[in-house]
Length: 334
Ligand code: ADP
Ligand code: MG
Image (cartoon, rainbow, N blue to C red):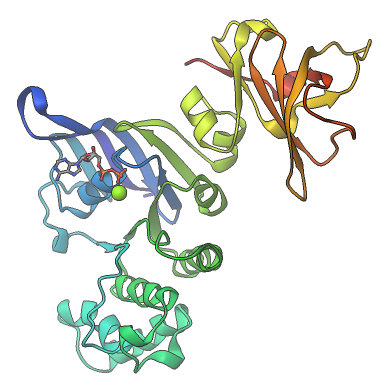
């Protein structure tokens, strides 16, 4: 089946009575075999709780979870074809790299040359062959991350859960590991579910993204769907940058419209062919590849424009015209 995971109307409440907190509130989604699926949302929105339900560390308060079309809510973690990579890596400090990777296989009762072969294949996959005899303390953070990944992949789970796996790495290492994770997912064909609060990470790595807030999935789709057609203010704002303006400003029935800073056009004087909205420059920031200019439209709202082709001579208080190409206006229902 292409539907590997089905989450159906899942609610998870912590506590009882009026003080109960719904960490997940009626979440439904499907994760397909072979996909790189991302749960994206701010801290506290319920991402880890959903992963823990998939892994079997928690029970839903309501709803069902199916894996390969079978109900798994009553299966303990070790009975599910699921493995987790934790942010802390959780490596065994007294074991070598290869012993760490073998651990998951031996726990499943595997012994002998197959284990050694599988460990070697996993270390090759994560490009750590040369460090097989080292202890975790003799590795960098990025290398430890790879060991954790190799250990989790060794038993060939159907589903690999990764809870903010890259957040402890510095920016440059993180970008490199993003590319690596993507390659490893492609080469193994294992379904990955990544948790992150980093929208750039989600956009660049995922086949599909579920954007979450307050225990709910607000939008689910491919990165381009979510960036180009956000369905609400939260998603428009959380994924990339967006100017959110009243729909009435552009004759839309929707209460709001969003427009990306790179789609707004700025000119110094009114173009008779193409009417725009007048305003004045508030701030100009040179960013290298682009320049960002904040404009206060007449009547108040601020609009951010970020482009590589802004006119020269933009300085604070300078009167300008903002134009909003119709096809760049994204109507938002809420
Ligand atoms: P995220 O991973 O998106 O940051 P979490 O799933 O960890 O969010 O948490 C979602 C909400 O549930 C938070 O408000 C958190 O405090 C609460 N929560 C998580 N686990 C527990 C728990 N074991 N007991 C009580 N509240 C919890
Ligand atoms: Mg979390």
